[in-house]
Image 1: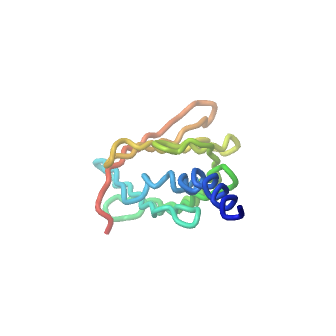
Image 2: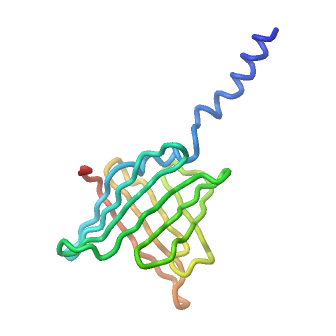
Image 3: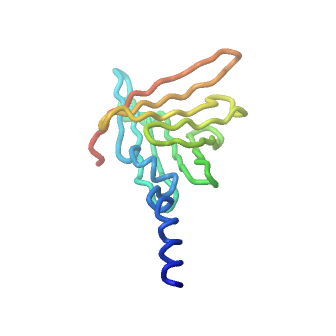
Length: 153
């Protein structure tokens, strides 16, 4: 009887275990992404999710000079994911999201100056659409970043 009860409990736990951690659902961010313009290169390097976090470092380069950089940690807080951003020359800021996270995720912080939202959308296996948006000086603004997957190195 004990074995039967243990098997029943294991069967109930399978669906939750199969889903994994919330951060695992952002595995599509993993890798190196690049956006090239005539004057700059923007890079984002995302780690694979592990231990309930993803890590990113990014930088914007112009003429082999770093114009700005950022470190980001996405971590789990209950059923919410938190985007913990540390941009160069600015105070750190946290943005929160709620599921689903399958092909896109929106992080929000209405109290932040700009942006109030950070959005990532999967656009195929080799493309990533990112957007920062919000209100600045009473006007709604948004900046889009279209990335393509590149070889890390």
